[in-house]
Image 1 (cartoon, one colour):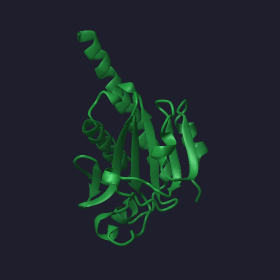
Image 2: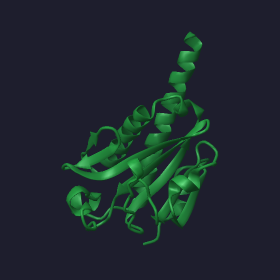
Image 3: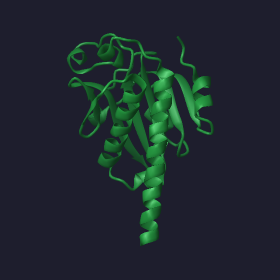
Length: 191
């Protein structure tokens, strides 16, 4: 079933969401976009992980997206951003699927010791691009990934709609961005 981007946009009014059927990397597509912009793709041909690793992006089976975070986020260390975003991903997964996960520092979300999601942070000038990949409906993984990766479907035994999980992720990330802004305003008022 094709990704219902119009339903997603209706659930996230005012949010600039760019849908791409295929891209090399949502990180590349998000570079230079305005803060708050979200770029999501049905497939990535060159999805990236930390340390130059690749991210397996089976077409239509997962969530592959990047969010442009504003200057307030850029003031935080990348490890803090990854930890905070990792917790947001955990919460969204739990709310949307009922699955519990754990955060493996600094950027992996695990279920049963296997990776179901990852976060990549790249500072770009006054902004930060956060790339997030979530394995949702894959039924297997190629080669060495078969021992280390898991999808939400493999963990639960059920297929999951991508759109409600994506909206839950956007809501958690939006709440996190508002919290960062409040903390920055409070720090500014104290100084």
